[in-house]
Image (cartoon, rainbow, N blue to C red):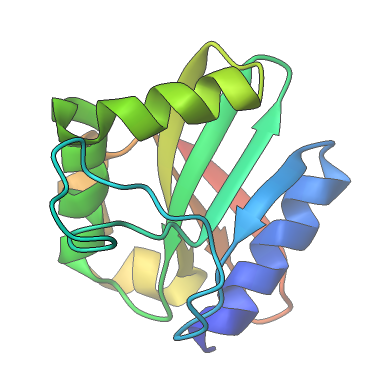
Length: 142
C-alpha cells in the first residue's frame, strides 16, 4: 500500500466521521499547507507540509502518513508539538479553523503498525490511524 492510498483512505475515514479537511498533501506533490518556522530567513526553508490538516468542533489534527513505519515522522510531530519554533503558524491555524487545540497523529498501513516499532514511539504522538488492505481505518489513541 503506497502513501497516497494511506492518505486517501484516512481522508475518506475522517470525512465519514464528520471531520473537515483543511489541507492535504500527496507524496511529492508539494500542494499542501506549509507550516513555517518562526525565525525563517528563507521563504520555505525548514517548513513542514503535513499530509493532512483537518478539524472538527474545537480540535485540529495534523498528520504525517507513510506506506511504512518511519521513525522520523514520529520525531517530527513531537518536535512540532513541543518545540515553540513553529508556534506562530500553529496559532494561526488554530485561529483560522476556530480550534482550541491540536492533536498530532501518524497514518500507517495496519501491517506496519503491528510488525514494526510504532508502539515504541507512541508517546511522541496523540494517535495513530491504521489502514488495512480493504482500506478500512482504525484509530489508536494514546
